[in-house]
Length: 117
Image (cartoon, rainbow, N blue to C red; front, top):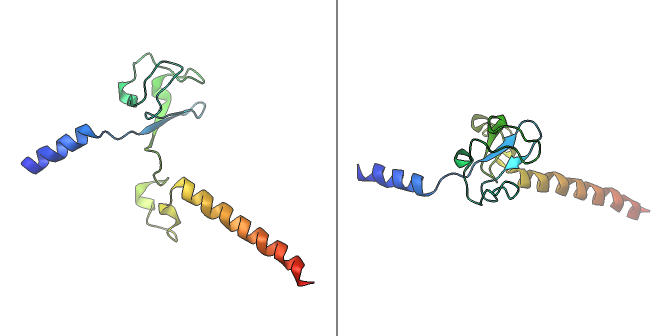
C-alpha cells in the first residue's frame, strides 16, 4: 500500500503539462508559458483555466480545444509508434533534422558533380 501511496503523491506533485490546440485557428495553449493576453500565469493547467477563458486568437470557447499532449513527444497514436523503420518514435524536431539534413546532403552531392569536369 505504501508504494501506491508514493506513486499517487508523485503523480499529484508532477502534473503532466499537456498542450491544447484550438481546432478553429490552430493556437496552442502551453501551460509552461501561460497566456499573457488573458493574464494567465505560467504553470496553469488547461483544466484550471476559468470557464470564461477564450482563445486569445479567435475567441473560441474552451471546448473548442483538443489535447495534443506534452511538448517534445512523438506525434501520432501510441499503438502506431512501433511500425515503420523507427522513424515513428522520433519527435517532430528530430524528424525535421532528419529530413532537412538529408536534403542538404543530397544538394551537396548534386553540387559536387560539377567537380567531375
